[in-house]
Image (cartoon, rainbow, N blue to C red; front, side):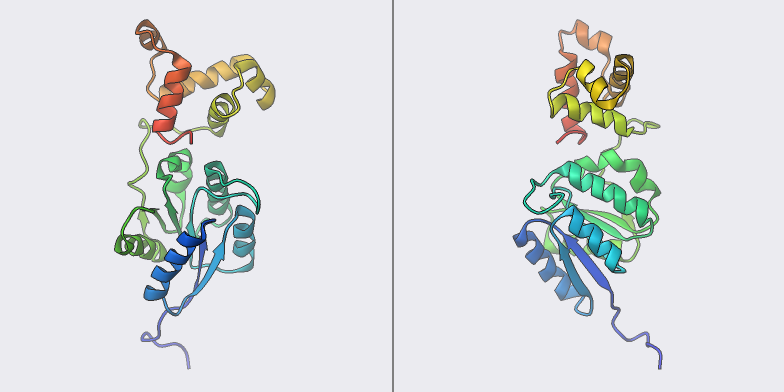
Length: 229
């Protein structure tokens, strides 16, 4: 006989977080509400991709600050890149991002908007009940992305613009060195800066007249908007 409508649903849920306390807490919440689901865990980006390749998952609950591999530092950039890969290669995968770095999702806003699977945002500071509601929404294929800070209407972030921010403010490189790193002309880097000024609503002429340092102002605005950690 086939399954009846009264039978409890089954599936596999993957929880990705490098902190055991968070993993355990999330597992406890899930076991209360989904006792018939198999719960899998991963602590690195590499392990997450292996689990996705080996299992058909009903839901992925993903932290953003994770290491690429064991014994490496946890970085938000790693989680963002992992999220980008998951959405690209598994376009219908249900995803709940559970993190304290929600603002960073603005970097992949366009990919999230076009993602076909469920997608919800869970701030780790939420109550257990609120966490469950967001997770359950993603599991059912719903989307809740209002927590992502909007950029200017019609603006789409380019990966190379984010590379410039990272190289300038994480690596401390000047434009010439950034151009060499990205294998482009210095004039291209100046063009990228102008695009970033537009995204961050910086007017170079006015802000310079007001005595503001454009690089410092750019860094401040980029961190406020979630473009830098």
